[in-house]
Length: 139
View 1 (spheres, rainbow, N blue to C red):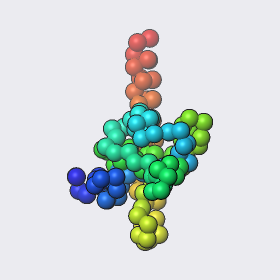
View 2 (tube, rainbow, N blue to C red; view 1 turned 120 degrees about the horizontal axis):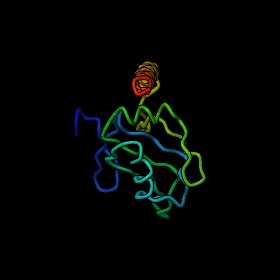
View 3 (cartoon, rainbow, N blue to C red; view 1 turned 45 degrees about the vertical axis):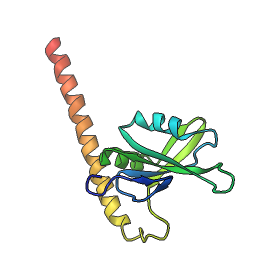
View 4 (cartoon, rainbow, N blue to C red; view 1 turned 90 degrees about the vertical axis):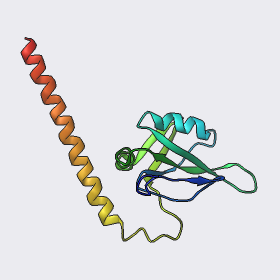
């Protein structure tokens, strides 16, 4: 793992949460880990997908975790907050272990998210300007 940011699994348990991991709530019971991996791969390179299942029945509990190779991809998805997949709206947020005190981290996460959004908007603005300049030169 790079800087402890990736989630590793031992057997079927996830052992570490990092910034590159997102919580995915509202996952359709029809979705398996392979299809969820395929869906999230369109946003960036996926290291691991884990759908949480009931110990007794083995059925999905309707939520899981996705770990990306790139922290920025995870942060962009956290900013989006909601994605639609197979007819269901999935909630995307930061991943935290049960019992962890993540409430004190919220202001830092918010500030980081704001910076990422600003950088993304600036980059998009630059891309649009470059395209406009190229079009003007071609005319």
